[in-house]
Amino acid sequence: MRKKLSKSFNVVGVWHAGHHGCHWTSATHVLTFHALHSFTRAVLHHCSSLLLVCSQKRHDINGSEVGYFHHVNHGVDYVFVDHPSFPRPGGLYSDEFGTFGDNQFRFTLLTLAALEAPLVLPLGEQGLYGQDCIFMANDWHTALIPVYLAAKYRAHGVYNNARSILAIHNLRHQGVFPPGSYWSLGLPDNWYGTLEWQYPPDQRMGAYEEEGRAVNHIKAGIITADRIVTVSPGYAEEIKTWLGGWGMDGLLASRGFVLNGVINGIDTERAWPSPWTPTSPCWPSLVAWTPRKARTSCWKP
Picture (cartoon, rainbow, N blue to C red):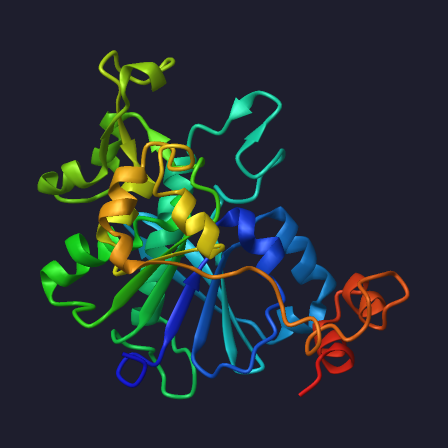
């Protein structure tokens, strides 16, 4: 698969943008998507050199126009997706008045923008990335990527050779919405069962309908992704049990043959030769948001 599918796309939700804003990697075909929320805007404003070399493009997605900001750094393509619904006062999911009512729309728009980008953006040295690629969907926020690949794109002969990986960091957060919201996703009617979820009586606790039915994004990703990865081998086993599966244990156990746990962390000897303290040579570089300097001073080839 690596020989045929040499391009990978890491699709991260709004809440990931701050953590993933400064990837350091030597990979030559990696594309990282970020929703352009207020925190990321502040980072981009601070890194004025990044703004100067970003290419920009507008694109219509189901009647909503998004902006793409593209930047290449150390062989990595970074694409920031902008839309008026992304930046707003408060937190990433809610403010003092409660949860944002359009979270499903916001993250679905990011998902679709990521799927459209390889088809419309001139990325890399060869122009458009094309269709033979691997998408990595992070948590419920972009868990519909494998669903859209199968129901929206492959049904029309697009992305036939593309593959998807679902990364689960915390299974408790599943992207659960009212069952009627399915019709706003632009998916065919016969795919409703892929997202449908019914909670058992003891877990309903004010569910959207008396019978506990809902639309569950992470459930849809679990049953349609080509591979599933999580943060450690131990967590991969835990989520297959009723103690840690949050209702998804049966589905994950049935897909255990494509589920792997990858340990979080870094090579402390190679990447961080000094202790992680304010006196470390890496620390001033990170505080100053200068990733190239940090890479030079903290990475041992």
